[in-house]
Image 1 (spheres, rainbow, N blue to C red):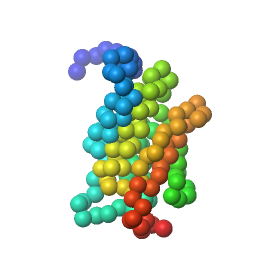
Image 2 (spheres, one colour; image 1 turned 45 degrees about the vertical axis):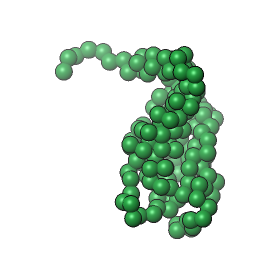
Image 3 (tube, rainbow, N blue to C red; image 1 turned 60 degrees about the horizontal axis):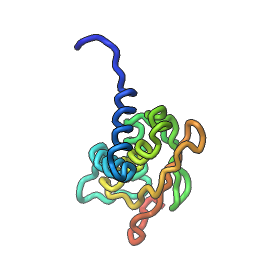
Length: 149
């Protein structure tokens, strides 16, 4: 492999700038792309297995950890919050928040849809502190009991 400098951050800045400048709804396009990647990255259960909220959050946390976030512990039910520390794209997100944060929102939504979770990500609250974003979860399937309760 040839030696030399790599500049993935510059590439990310260029691509997010291109998306925000050329697409009519860049945030929605990022959510859609994120959902596709979230589905791809999720640890999908077998078709016969129904997972509960705790298992869904465990699987989502694994995806977020693999991507480079440092998700914190989740407490409470049914409206839960996942604290996300260490955004792996922080510098780009600070410049292109609509695109990058929407991509992350979609990623989480896609991962939870893929595992047929009884919860979904309602919204992502970016940069509530310099190194902290909050993913707000909500029940998606009110008819299915949460087996972990």
